[in-house]
Length: 379
Image 1 (cartoon, rainbow, N blue to C red):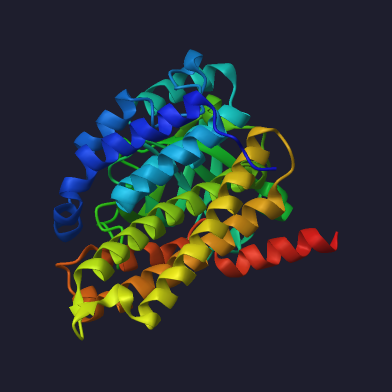
Image 2: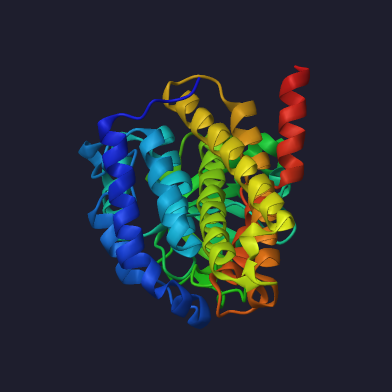
């Protein structure tokens, strides 16, 4: 199953591309150097409907299909992966779980400000000692009058310090193991939510990632997402979509690396001719293009399956595994093609190489994707 794009999908893709290249791309290098969070750009993306793309219009979203979201995300990542990851998190792990598991009141309360960009959202699952093994989390939710008190620590929280509403997992019944974990919509604008300083990351430097301490942070009764014990169901419910989203980000970065490499191969003269005329460079470019075409087919196919409501766990995991690993390799080759200049911040491929590396790690490592694929095949 491979999609034929509709006129609306093409229009959304092109609008995302135009905005990305005119408004996001020009300041990307400066933001990477300074670590400045692109608040104004995110506000504009919200006004354009890009922060709640699949959220119905009744809840303040754009109400478009999942493939349109993937196409737009790819274009934003082409310009600046830091902006793309903020957009992705708001769409896939803040809005999506609330849309899937929230009550009507929760959707009205939280989705409208999240989808419009009035506030940003995030996801608090990972802890210092609970990464891929999400069921090992230790954060506790203790019942009190009117709601719950959360205590614990969360790690690698995207949009920490700049976001307000976070889908948060905590243990409500320690004796029930995995079934004792529940999901909450946490308002981070309170004294009990202590945001650490932004992590000094290798890439995605203008995206904010922090450690979070929860010290008697209060969540009202009506902010539990789903039923008690539904925490991992909520956390994993949107995994297929999240994996496809990360693959789309990696695809955008890889395409930019390819385009930069082609331009450099035509302009750089070595031994009296453009380096693109040397067989070894041609081999690199050909293999990069082959990986790109295969990755794009996998990503779009997985997105089309999800949009059609069909099972796509294997396809989503395969798209993330192949695309992110390929994107890392493509960016590595791009640096090699640029030679010494590829190691300099004067050239864009240096940033692309740093930004792409994490795509094989977050929202499920490549090792986890291999486990998922094998497990599904063996069922």
